Amino acid sequence: MLRRAFAFAAALFLVLPSVAQVQRSFPATALRGVVVFGEAPEISLNGQAGRLAPGARIRDASNMVVTPSAVYGGRYVVHFTLDSYGLMKDVWILTAAEVANKPWPRTLPEQQAWTFDPAAQVWTKP
Image 1 (cartoon, one colour):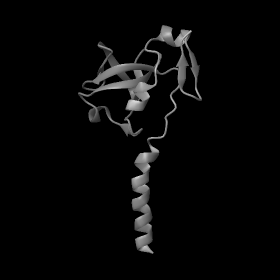
Image 2: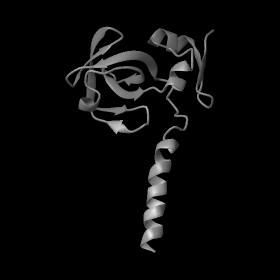
Image 3: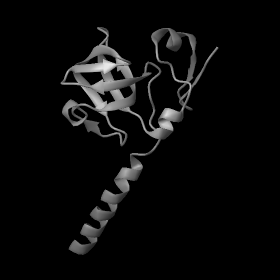
Image 4: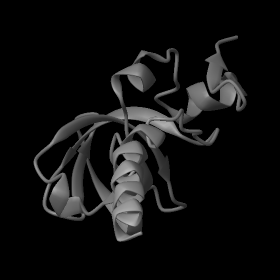
């Protein structure tokens, strides 16, 4: 009985990473950019100085929540949302397949002018 439980747990552990590879759904408010994580809360977003919001959530390419120290010094293509103060609130480090999903807005004016299909996770330019 213990062997079966262990085998089940081991199989589940091996399957979980593949489950995390399921297509993620991003909100229509998510923009795309390149971020370099500095000493928290400092970041560089598209070459400009920025900050993480208090309580910011960073998800890696496996969709696991990571701490800013885990990505310190890394340069990543991301989707992100901003809070009302312009601070980076939610961050998703993208997989190669997600990066290939183009076009994706990089600025608020693009986001406001384009049309988003949340089911297909696709943006359409006018």
